[in-house]
Image (cartoon, rainbow, N blue to C red; front, side, top):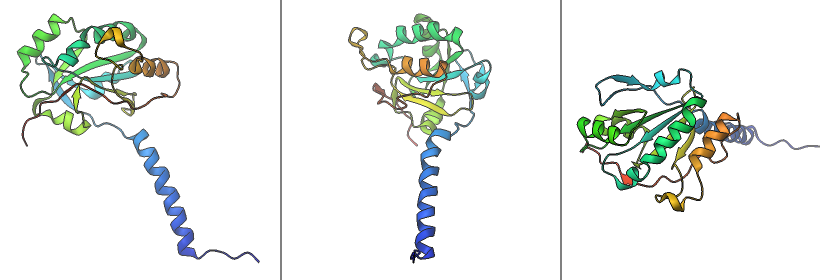
Length: 196
Protein backbone atom coordinates (compact mmCIF):
# COMPACT_ATOMS: atom_id res chain seq x y z
CA UNK A 1 0.00 0.00 0.00
CA UNK A 2 1.35 3.40 -1.01
CA UNK A 3 1.50 5.87 1.84
CA UNK A 4 0.53 9.36 0.71
CA UNK A 5 2.26 12.38 2.13
CA UNK A 6 0.13 14.76 4.17
CA UNK A 7 -1.72 17.38 2.12
CA UNK A 8 0.19 20.35 3.65
CA UNK A 9 3.49 18.80 2.54
CA UNK A 10 2.20 18.25 -0.98
CA UNK A 11 0.86 21.80 -1.15
CA UNK A 12 4.20 23.10 0.11
CA UNK A 13 6.07 21.24 -2.62
CA UNK A 14 3.69 22.55 -5.31
CA UNK A 15 4.04 26.12 -3.98
CA UNK A 16 7.83 25.87 -4.03
CA UNK A 17 7.85 24.58 -7.59
CA UNK A 18 5.47 27.28 -8.79
CA UNK A 19 7.21 30.18 -7.10
CA UNK A 20 10.58 28.91 -8.23
CA UNK A 21 9.48 28.83 -11.86
CA UNK A 22 7.87 32.25 -11.53
CA UNK A 23 11.02 33.79 -10.13
CA UNK A 24 13.11 32.27 -12.88
CA UNK A 25 10.76 33.69 -15.48
CA UNK A 26 10.40 37.10 -13.91
CA UNK A 27 13.91 38.14 -14.89
CA UNK A 28 13.37 37.11 -18.49
CA UNK A 29 9.89 38.58 -18.82
CA UNK A 30 10.38 41.79 -16.82
CA UNK A 31 9.26 44.65 -19.03
CA UNK A 32 10.91 48.04 -18.81
CA UNK A 33 8.43 50.86 -18.34
CA UNK A 34 8.18 53.68 -20.83
CA UNK A 35 9.86 57.00 -20.09
CA UNK A 36 10.30 60.31 -21.87
CA UNK A 37 13.51 62.35 -21.85
CA UNK A 38 14.78 65.27 -23.91
CA UNK A 39 17.84 65.10 -26.12
CA UNK A 40 20.45 67.89 -26.18
CA UNK A 41 18.41 69.71 -28.86
CA UNK A 42 15.39 69.86 -26.57
CA UNK A 43 13.35 67.25 -28.45
CA UNK A 44 11.46 64.67 -26.41
CA UNK A 45 11.91 60.96 -26.99
CA UNK A 46 10.12 58.07 -25.33
CA UNK A 47 11.64 54.63 -24.91
CA UNK A 48 8.73 52.98 -26.65
CA UNK A 49 9.17 55.06 -29.82
CA UNK A 50 12.43 53.24 -30.52
CA UNK A 51 10.46 50.05 -31.16
CA UNK A 52 9.56 51.17 -34.68
CA UNK A 53 11.32 49.01 -37.27
CA UNK A 54 13.68 47.69 -34.58
CA UNK A 55 14.84 44.15 -33.91
CA UNK A 56 16.68 45.21 -30.75
CA UNK A 57 17.16 48.41 -28.76
CA UNK A 58 20.55 49.17 -27.23
CA UNK A 59 20.41 51.65 -24.35
CA UNK A 60 23.85 52.95 -23.39
CA UNK A 61 24.51 54.93 -20.21
CA UNK A 62 27.41 57.17 -21.18
CA UNK A 63 29.27 60.26 -19.98
CA UNK A 64 31.17 63.23 -21.34
CA UNK A 65 33.96 63.35 -18.75
CA UNK A 66 34.52 59.72 -17.86
CA UNK A 67 37.79 58.51 -19.45
CA UNK A 68 36.51 54.94 -19.60
CA UNK A 69 33.30 55.93 -21.34
CA UNK A 70 35.31 58.13 -23.70
CA UNK A 71 37.61 55.22 -24.49
CA UNK A 72 34.54 53.57 -26.04
CA UNK A 73 33.37 56.53 -28.16
CA UNK A 74 34.81 55.21 -31.43
CA UNK A 75 33.62 51.70 -30.67
CA UNK A 76 30.09 52.94 -30.03
CA UNK A 77 30.11 54.84 -33.32
CA UNK A 78 31.34 51.70 -35.09
CA UNK A 79 28.65 49.56 -33.45
CA UNK A 80 25.96 51.95 -34.71
CA UNK A 81 27.48 51.85 -38.20
CA UNK A 82 27.66 48.04 -38.20
CA UNK A 83 24.21 47.26 -36.80
CA UNK A 84 21.87 50.16 -37.56
CA UNK A 85 21.02 48.89 -41.03
CA UNK A 86 20.32 45.46 -39.54
CA UNK A 87 17.52 46.81 -37.38
CA UNK A 88 19.33 47.61 -34.14
CA UNK A 89 18.48 50.99 -32.60
CA UNK A 90 20.97 52.75 -30.32
CA UNK A 91 20.25 55.45 -27.76
CA UNK A 92 22.56 57.06 -25.22
CA UNK A 93 21.55 58.33 -21.78
CA UNK A 94 23.58 60.78 -19.74
CA UNK A 95 22.65 60.68 -16.03
CA UNK A 96 25.61 62.55 -14.54
CA UNK A 97 24.49 65.56 -12.52
CA UNK A 98 27.48 67.76 -13.48
CA UNK A 99 27.22 67.25 -17.27
CA UNK A 100 24.80 69.74 -18.76
CA UNK A 101 23.01 69.90 -22.11
CA UNK A 102 25.60 72.13 -23.83
CA UNK A 103 28.41 69.83 -22.77
CA UNK A 104 26.52 66.76 -23.98
CA UNK A 105 25.79 68.42 -27.33
CA UNK A 106 29.42 69.41 -27.82
CA UNK A 107 30.63 65.95 -26.82
CA UNK A 108 28.23 64.26 -29.25
CA UNK A 109 29.32 66.51 -32.10
CA UNK A 110 33.03 66.06 -31.41
CA UNK A 111 32.66 62.28 -31.39
CA UNK A 112 30.23 62.16 -34.34
CA UNK A 113 27.57 60.29 -32.40
CA UNK A 114 24.93 59.21 -34.90
CA UNK A 115 22.40 58.30 -32.21
CA UNK A 116 20.18 60.16 -29.77
CA UNK A 117 21.75 61.14 -26.47
CA UNK A 118 19.12 61.89 -23.83
CA UNK A 119 19.59 63.81 -20.60
CA UNK A 120 18.41 61.99 -17.48
CA UNK A 121 18.00 64.87 -15.04
CA UNK A 122 18.19 63.80 -11.40
CA UNK A 123 19.29 60.33 -12.56
CA UNK A 124 15.66 59.12 -12.47
CA UNK A 125 16.10 56.49 -15.18
CA UNK A 126 19.52 55.41 -13.94
CA UNK A 127 17.92 54.77 -10.55
CA UNK A 128 14.97 52.85 -12.00
CA UNK A 129 17.24 50.72 -14.16
CA UNK A 130 19.87 50.37 -11.45
CA UNK A 131 22.58 51.61 -13.81
CA UNK A 132 25.81 52.14 -11.90
CA UNK A 133 28.61 53.12 -14.30
CA UNK A 134 29.46 54.57 -17.69
CA UNK A 135 29.48 52.88 -20.08
CA UNK A 136 26.76 50.39 -19.11
CA UNK A 137 24.62 48.62 -21.69
CA UNK A 138 21.05 47.33 -21.69
CA UNK A 139 19.76 45.47 -24.76
CA UNK A 140 15.98 45.14 -25.03
CA UNK A 141 13.71 43.35 -27.44
CA UNK A 142 10.66 45.04 -28.95
CA UNK A 143 8.59 43.99 -25.95
CA UNK A 144 11.12 45.96 -23.87
CA UNK A 145 12.35 42.84 -22.12
CA UNK A 146 16.00 42.63 -21.13
CA UNK A 147 18.11 40.41 -23.37
CA UNK A 148 21.59 41.53 -22.34
CA UNK A 149 23.06 43.73 -19.62
CA UNK A 150 26.65 44.66 -18.93
CA UNK A 151 29.73 45.80 -20.80
CA UNK A 152 30.52 46.43 -24.45
CA UNK A 153 33.63 44.27 -24.37
CA UNK A 154 36.22 43.16 -21.85
CA UNK A 155 38.83 45.94 -22.02
CA UNK A 156 39.01 49.69 -21.89
CA UNK A 157 42.04 49.42 -24.19
CA UNK A 158 40.85 48.46 -27.64
CA UNK A 159 44.10 46.68 -28.50
CA UNK A 160 43.58 44.37 -25.51
CA UNK A 161 40.00 43.33 -26.27
CA UNK A 162 39.53 39.57 -26.22
CA UNK A 163 35.75 39.20 -25.93
CA UNK A 164 33.07 41.38 -27.50
CA UNK A 165 29.99 40.52 -25.47
CA UNK A 166 27.68 43.17 -26.91
CA UNK A 167 28.47 42.22 -30.50
CA UNK A 168 27.97 38.55 -29.70
CA UNK A 169 24.60 39.27 -28.08
CA UNK A 170 23.45 41.36 -31.06
CA UNK A 171 24.60 38.73 -33.56
CA UNK A 172 22.67 36.06 -31.66
CA UNK A 173 19.54 38.22 -31.47
CA UNK A 174 19.67 38.97 -35.20
CA UNK A 175 20.13 35.26 -35.93
CA UNK A 176 17.01 34.46 -33.91
CA UNK A 177 18.98 32.69 -31.19
CA UNK A 178 18.89 32.96 -27.41
CA UNK A 179 21.56 35.25 -26.02
CA UNK A 180 24.17 32.88 -24.63
CA UNK A 181 25.64 35.33 -22.10
CA UNK A 182 22.90 37.57 -20.75
CA UNK A 183 24.85 39.32 -17.99
CA UNK A 184 28.41 40.62 -17.70
CA UNK A 185 30.03 43.00 -15.24
CA UNK A 186 30.01 46.55 -16.55
CA UNK A 187 33.02 48.64 -15.61
CA UNK A 188 33.61 52.36 -15.81
CA UNK A 189 33.11 55.59 -13.87
CA UNK A 190 30.40 55.69 -11.24
CA UNK A 191 27.34 57.67 -12.33
CA UNK A 192 27.40 60.95 -10.41
CA UNK A 193 23.99 61.15 -8.82
CA UNK A 194 22.11 63.97 -7.15
CA UNK A 195 21.54 63.60 -3.42
CA UNK A 196 18.03 62.41 -2.57
